[in-house]
Image 1 (spheres, protein in one colour):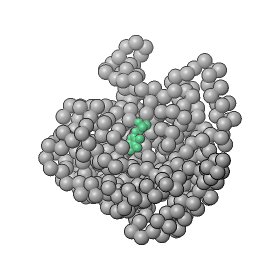
Image 2 (image 1 turned 45 degrees about the vertical axis):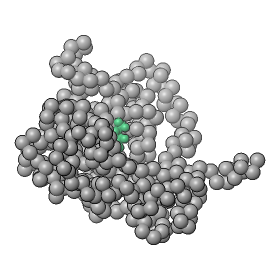
Image 3 (image 1 turned 30 degrees about the horizontal axis):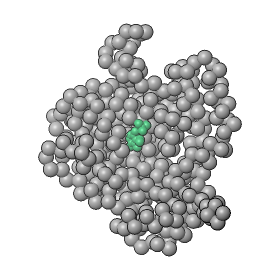
Image 4 (image 1 turned 180 degrees about the vertical axis):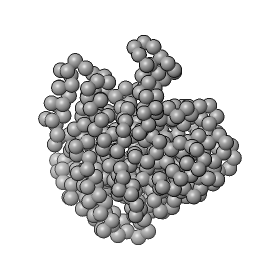
Length: 374
Ligand SMILES: Cc1ncc(COP(=O)(O)O)c(C=O)c1O
């Protein structure tokens, strides 16, 4: 009985939670799903086309191709520009595995550049040094919700005639120099995984581009390379966005802007009130409108702090504890010694505090008070 009462008084605070959002929108979501089920179309139909149009407009792009996940969006983007065996693709090691797994799925090789110590994003000063005859593309990752430095990155890409694919899995609703994230590279890849800023109720992703040629390739690539029914022009994959997910995502898109404002408010409260010694708070770059997909802090005593917070029913996350180049599955690509000093150092110190639009003021206060007592 006492435990039950305590649990009610001090409920668990998760790093992310969709149930509060669902309970608010349950009737609307059920109506949307029912409408799709009654329509007689479940895959790649009106809802997908409608969402592709809405999201590409939102991102200032001419075309959107709805696919099964953010991982597939990256893979299809890479395949559309002809990435193949032994090509090199420059990216970062402080990212989610799929950024690199998409490169490896094309039999290409990931080449890493280090990140900045303040914002944890690709350091563009280090790119040129990594360019070789085999370099075909750069994938900057808009990590944690803010954009990499595209003015600089696109200039280098142009100089060497290489393509840029934005990994926007974490940056829906962010802006760089007042333009939406996803509007800078030759292509952009988004994820609609439930935790994301624009999250669905299952897997989903989209490739965006303003090139008609690349769009047409992406459309074929997501459906076995087919140009017409049962006829493939080239080898493709099966990566379709379901109608129910597209319909729900169109509904979620309407709330994206207000949700980002809520995320930014939470970040501001954290920024103003967290006062623990040696805790490094996130930096919002001057050209960026940060969307705070996650609120990442740094502390040398990460393990102790996370354990202390967990003992107080506050659950954090680490994005990411293992840089990709250090993992067993990807180590073999680093034939030469690679210098990723910041990546290695930061991976031991970063962790993210609870962050989602419905996070209540009471929970925020509890997180801050608990942390400040550490
Ligand atoms: C940076 C980054 N890239 C790519 C992906 C892949 O997206 P998905 O999980 O939808 O395949 C994710 C999602 O985890 C991500 O965070």
